[in-house]
Length: 163
Image (cartoon, rainbow, N blue to C red; front, side, top):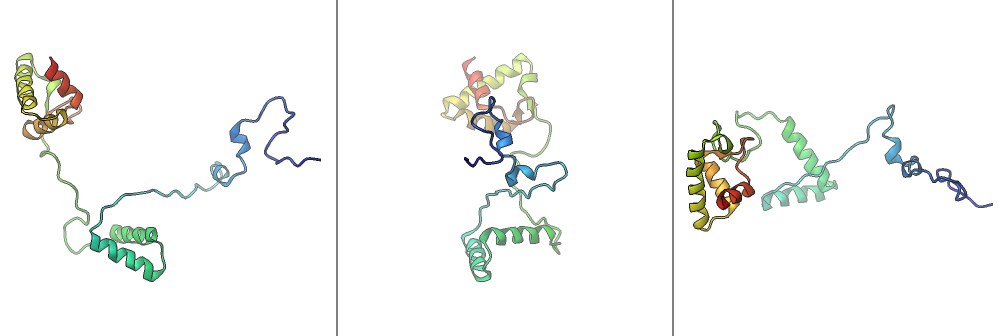
């Protein structure tokens, strides 16, 4: 008598089982039940460290016998729970492209203003600037944006040049 795994149907069965039933006995799928605890999830992050900081963390990982991921996790947890004695934030953020204020929305401009902007875009394009660079320049200098308040897309700049 041939041994058949309990979660597979016999090859003589008229209809095959759906793939999700064939995998129902794996840990990955049983932990998703409504009465079960949710599975632990791990997230991968990318960080840029100074070479000296990297060496310190790597050396600490070796001397303590912990994995590098564990050391990074502990450092992040320590950073999140520490209350600095200074009023400065623990994490530095990048600077915004421009100071927050009302953007100048290209689609809502009247025809005369759009003509002036088209002229400016064409001048920048003749100067050898890429479509993305033009978009960034216009946003930084004049806050010219799309309806979403973000810089115009390079394809919009390209269509402005072609009109």
